Image (cartoon, rainbow, N blue to C red; front, side, top):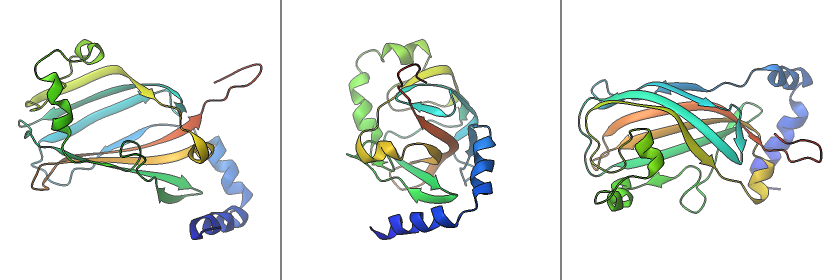
Length: 199
């Protein structure tokens, strides 16, 4: 048993049962905040909603979002994604799996979007009026019920999936100047497949 597992075991036995029962009665919601620290940053998030909450894994999450770009974004963008999982109120960082899922750094997302510059964007993005390649131009952006696929989580991680999370997404230029930041707090729940029902 490593140090983290030992800490979790101690917390499990020391936490009063009343604290656990209170958390079960809380209604699951999505909370968001624009965590950008620079008032002159170009990316401003005004509203984020999603359903269903808790997020069902695997499944489809429908996202509604609105905000503003006060200036064109540069062609080199770095995205840092930090995901924390809460165990009895204590946050633990979700590591980056295969460079794609978890707390990962995407060094230049524009490189991966270059293939869309000479052809049309995927149909789902076109239907919601979303741009899919750099540079992203100044203006208001909004999307209503954009469907996002939530993949199945395999192995040991899947058994620990249920619970509360905090996600922080930060966008930087090549000089490490923060262009925008979004923080989300939400819950996730593993899809139950039973004999008589499933959720």
